[in-house]
Length: 186
Image (cartoon, rainbow, N blue to C red; front, side):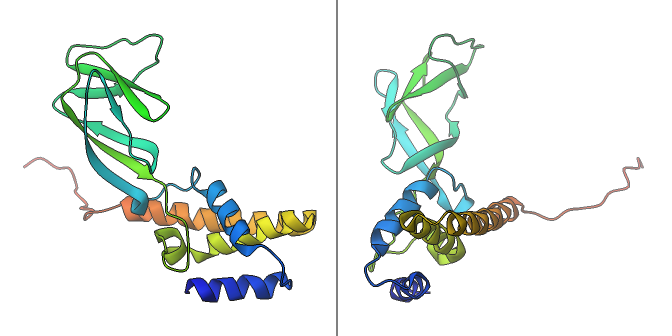
């Protein structure tokens, strides 16, 4: 489905010419960004550590892993119990603050925010799970209309669509061949 087809479909469902569809899309995206975690939204970046801190990317949502020559683990900003070879980290706004002596660079795998859907730009969520967009935008429309029954119906559809995304993520992370073994010694 293209952006224009999506807008036409939403307009047909809304049965209103004056509905601010683009506003509904932005509202839906703002709601979905922190919720949707999927392997297609994972990015990897090498960050430089200066004076025990590094700035996170602009599209950062959540850390999946931090690696370097040392072991990195999340810690409380007020107390950190670390073993030899471990470095703690915690987040302050858009920065990661390290406790201990970190590497000069760290590799971070993180969940990234998907970009806005526009006439000229799509994103993985729209391309792969348009039902999530449809239900979320229609939920925003019914909130605009002050229609609690419509909101409830679309919220149920949205939860089902998010379940499909979660299952797709789970299946996308499974890999390799499963080998059955009897476990006998020769």
